[in-house]
Amino acid sequence: MASRADNFASNLSLANFSKATELKNRIWFTVGALVVFRFLSFVPLPGVNPLVLQTLYSKTQGGILDIFNTFSGGSLQRMSLTALGIMPYITASIVVQLAASLHPALASLKKEGESGRQKLNQYTRYGAVGLTAIQGWVAASGLVAMGASNGLDVVVIPAMLFRITAVISLIGGTMFLLWLGEQITSRGIGNGTSLIIMAGIVAQMPTFISQLFEGGRSGSIGGFTIVMMVGLLVGLIIFIAFMERATRQLLIQYPKRASANGMMQADRSHLPLKLNTSGVIPPIFASSLLLLPLTITQFAGKSVSPDSFWGGAIIALNQYLGHGKPLYMGLYAAGIIFFCFFYTAVVFNPEETADNLKRNGGFIPGIRPGKNTATYLDYVLTRITVIGAAYITVVCVIPEWVIAQTGIRLFFAGGTSLLIVVNVTVDTITQIQSHLLAHQYGDLIKKARLKGRLR
Image (cartoon, rainbow, N blue to C red; front, top):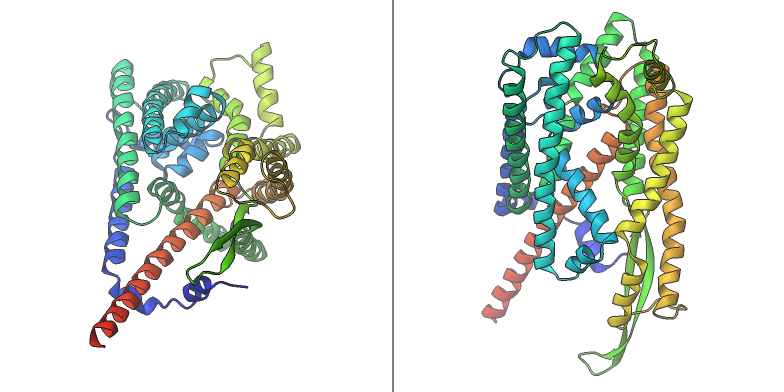
């Protein structure tokens, strides 16, 4: 049965949106920040010839570069100031979270409250700077090497000077995006980091639509194929939205307490466990590991002879780990399932949750507090993670299979992009509804106070 708050939220009217001045200001600030992000994605690095770079990128598509290019909104393809996007910060935050769960000193920081979180955030920023410097140097060196191997003068300044200026520029661009994301979170609406990633993915949508309908006009793509793709896209979006909001509600019982009228009353609440606790991390990790060999071979260029042992190994890797290959699909699915269980075990600690419930006097009916509660939570979490892992695997593998069968780059970077877009959209809409709900409650409180004064 829905609670009064749920019924009240379901009756929210967007007619009150025009009265919510603070919410409108937050939305306009978010839109303006995202526009600034898109403008920066078209500012190239010093010393790069954009026209020659476009020719080079068309020859070296594929691999993990396409994923980073999608998440950065095409910035990597243009080698702009934000070519690396905000992915170094995401990688650093994942590493810090894993380290905080495994290292005792960092784990103690998590329990120190706000001061501990600030220290971990500072470590994450330091890690983001280091990763940006390393990835920037590798990207600059790879660009010089690939341009030379293909006979294209992509860089018009000395190679060493280009590497240094590229690293400095990329660090500045990534740190500016990080600051911009924090401003969106505090002064805008939604999570700034997630919105920046989603904006980069959505920016590729016009290219996908134009290619799809251009193929239909030229006859290279049949009308039935277009209809099937659009239907599959809509079906996956609805399925993802349904599964991301699905939770397993565990009933939590609290001991009887004296209420305002002197009667003893027992409190009840629910502990929600999401079916997809790990989020979008498993497909990102799995695809990154699988596409890493292909990316290394791209950066290696023609420096390795195909007749040598390493040359034969590289050719075999490209044959068996290509998009749509059975081995790639199998390893991709296995990697997603593994990281679903691994990351869920990292982000959710049943023992800690059981201790918090015991400390507050809560318990699950029929389960003894303490160790038995932790065992039960681990049992339930394992069962729902099986469903979550199967769901993510289906969402990520189906687009890869369609790409292999049709040869069309569907869904920008695959199911991972759809997961990110739907998740961020649902979270942002939820925050907008929360602001509208708070505004509507505020109006009710003002009316109640006014009636009280008139009496």
